[in-house]
Image 1 (tube, rainbow, N blue to C red):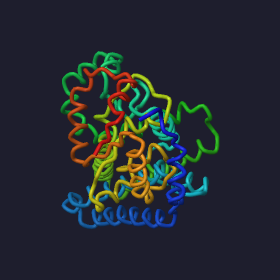
Image 2 (image 1 turned 135 degrees about the horizontal axis):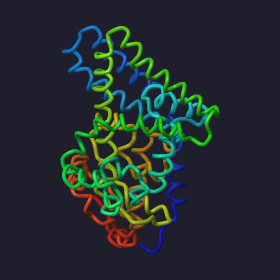
Image 3 (image 1 turned 60 degrees about the vertical axis):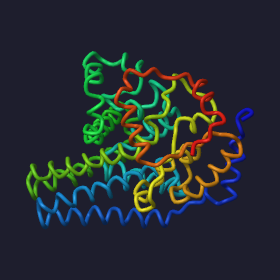
Image 4 (image 1 turned 90 degrees about the horizontal axis):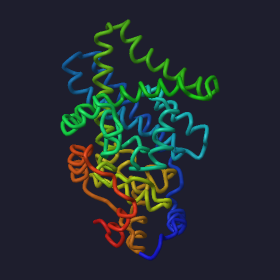
Length: 348
């Protein structure tokens, strides 16, 4: 590969194929089906009790995870051509339905993760507390955190993903408290949505069925959402190089991201996040168009000698689990070395 190909050429090819068009009606219908699925599961649990919950909580959590990931589309403005409807969806799916702050998410995910994927000390998605993905990040932790990472990181990552949504809720509230533009319209909307979330999910059920039932159901459902989110996000980046700094071009996104090959009936619940390469290059492509975008992008990368990484999901999952086990003792890599290793190597 001679130099870095112009991404504008790929963008033009994708635009000609219509992949930047929105599929808003289909997305609203999908959102309605997902929310209806959560509601039906909750009604079934309320009607039939504990034994029904064993079956229905995992199903409700799956629908809830996909609902939150539709909110992720609103945050990226890939849901609708209307900025107002994108904002509405993001607030509906994040603070109102999920209890997660959209302002916090925009900073953590849209700005830091998408802007600096796999960059040591910057990308929060490769350093989910209390875990780390590089030696320097490990050395910058407190003594207690370092002890935990050395002794338990290999075993605790997946079990502790049940606490992911709890940690994100805590971070969302702290982010709101520290937000520089308090009392603005967006701040009040988020405060109001979060208040309604906790009243609807915890206060009202506690009055009807008692606090023990309400809090147990809430913890179980959203704990499983944390596991599902880890299963979606971790294999796409963890296991790929952690770099000391960022290459200042679009190839950095391709070098630190991979697609996940899944059966169609599972892919539908990922809301496009199995097509991470295209999502990182063009985050405003709606998820329904990402499969077509992936075909075009893979062929374009092959023509230009760009390493396009797409692997079976279970391989990526095993790779991520192996990597995280001893990531605390791994040195981050110079991005020049990463590029030298990838140039001319087209991933299958």
